[in-house]
Length: 204
Image (cartoon, rainbow, N blue to C red):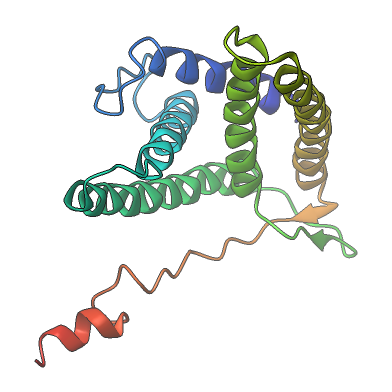
């Protein structure tokens, strides 16, 4: 199912390009795809990743106001949860796509689900975009550009490898050579009943 990578990569790059039209973390998303379609969720996934990329840049500003930093940390936490929820939703799409496939007797399981591989694929698109920006800068030394070009070359190689490996994984699942199992994320720090700081707060 290499066509899935052929579908998702341009969508990721569109989301990144659309965000950088304003380059502002508060820009409202304008998802161009039909709601609840896989294209819609892929665009949303990369938009969340892109906004969070810039959250992470902002919070590392050594001059950031501590109150603003705490507010931003809360936004990062929510973004992480939204990202996890969306990955699980995309895995539900894959589970439905392959629900009628009977795994072979010798079928094996992958170390990660397809959607978590797609998650890394989305973030790779961001790495390539921003490393290309560094290569294109005119206000830095040739040494800086050269080092960034070397890193960009590695990222481009990783893109080829990930495109191949994700396609192979989906082909193997479709053929019954591999099967997928989804372990829902059990993030304890967001759960008031599992985080001791939160459930202990009411006892003070």
